[in-house]
Structure formats: C-alpha cells, structure tokens
Length: 140
Figure 1 (cartoon, rainbow, N blue to C red):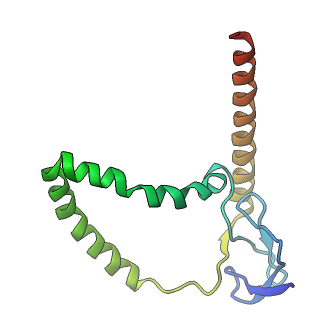
Figure 2 (cartoon, rainbow, N blue to C red):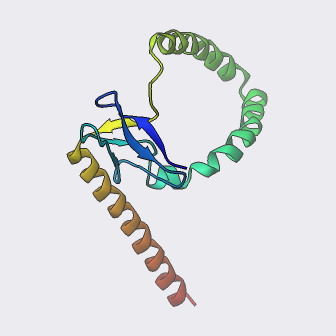
C-alpha cells in the first residue's frame, strides 16, 4: 500500500511512502512537489542497536535498587536535581507544536555526509571483526 505524506519543506503532499520503504539521513526521500529531501528514520549503529533499549530499560530497576541501598544520600541528591529538570523539560516540551509529518528536512550536503559517515562506520566495524578473527586464529 502506497500513501502520500506531507513534505516538511513545502508542506504539500509529495512524498510517496510504501509499506517497505526506508528513508534515512543517508538515503532520503525526494518530494515530488518541491524536490526537497526528507528522512523519517535514523541509520547506523544507533539504529542497529536500538533493539537493545527495550530489555535494558526493563533491567534498569536493578542498578537503581542497588544505588538506593548502597548510596541513599546520593539518591536523595539525584532526586532533588531530577525533579526540577523534569518540570523544566515538560514545560519546554508543552510549548512545542506537534509535527505535521514524521519526516524531517535534510540538505543534499548533510545527506551525503551522513551516507559517508554510515559507510565509514560499517567499514570500521568490518575491519574490527576481521582483525579480531585474525587475532583469535593466531592466539591458538
């Protein structure tokens, strides 16, 4: 199913999105109305390891309980700092308007830099894995 999404640059419906479409900073969508570039998802290691955030959020209760038991005064001080920070964040967040579309604008230069950064990151990970495998083979 293909749907038409509002472009963040011109505000007109011009980005075609399919069920399996993926538009990131390195591979953005192009608006058919104005020619602007837009993306809706991150890419790179943050997106690849984002699936680990769910289990980590569920496991965070154990370090919090350990900190409460071992360092009660530090927890009290942290809470006293955290409460005003949360109040300030919620007041600031409430004033911001909701976006019309899930897409965000990007320039061609930013898109090219993001593409090169993702390529360099994947290449570095590949080189690291190869070096680790060679090291493990020679360690025997």
